[in-house]
Picture 1 (cartoon, rainbow, N blue to C red):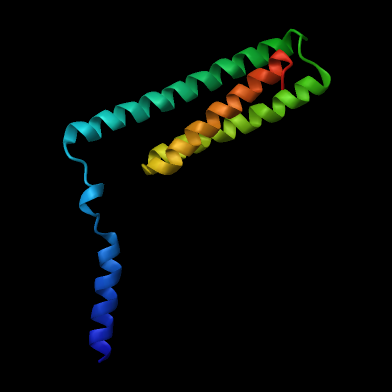
Picture 2 (picture 1 turned 180 degrees about the horizontal axis):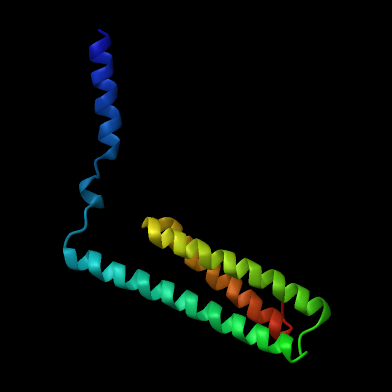
Length: 121
């Protein structure tokens, strides 16, 4: 009886590891296309953050951002950097849902940082 229970438990747990037919990509090209899109999104996020960070540092160095605005911009810079790190981590793991959420969060964080620089945030 114990062997039957163990065999049934193994079958159920291993069954959860097998992808359904809906999860299997139809062609290798569709996998490659999605990979290229993911890489482009990651590059766009990285480039946007680098541009934001460069502008922020330049404005602070020039004395154009000071006080409360500088503090707010620094907080938003930290948020944007953490979001970029999340994009990197999600890309490495290959988790599509967390990757999409991380890209969206990074874009919002960078936009908020730019808004703070312009005085809108």
